[in-house]
Image 1 (cartoon, rainbow over the protein chains, first blue to last red):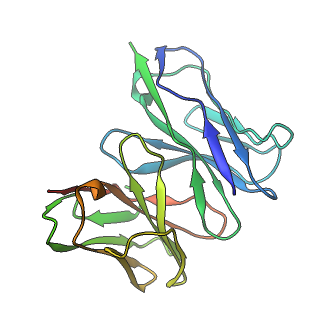
Image 2 (image 1 turned 60 degrees about the horizontal axis):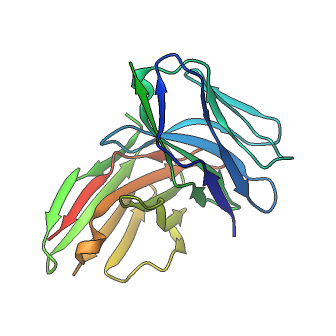
Length: 111
Length: 111
């Protein structure tokens, strides 16, 4: 079946460092891809999405590009802040309404 | 505020109790979901409702019983739960190929 694999965390960075969280997927066809963020004690929030190959999703300084050739959707941010500390989930939408999530990557940003 | 509201936020129940979790969305979405989030485990999709019909049931034990009376409301009825059912239960909704919007979750503790 379809699956999503994320890099294991936690990822610990200093403020203003460059962030990359890797995400690769296995799917039949061309699913839509998403990044979600979960702050402590909260539900998941949609961060960005891409619906077809070569699409770039972006929001709040975060970016991810849908790479069909490498089946990847890596999350990047040029300069992280302490407030970006959270858990980040990569996900794909299968045919129909089912969302498949990766295991999540904890990001800790130190001042 | 994501437009998806879950109540209660916290629930402690005994193994012989019966309780219900409530989810409400006024985003006009036509699909609603229940997810279970346990410590150190990936998000588990429990149920999917599309246009008020259950379209997915991921081998969830019968002690969890969903109900979707209309497109805006989703319930999860709980009875004779086990301590291992303690987790964060997340409700989400979506429309078409857009991303899902999540509620803040109900933190359930079974004692």
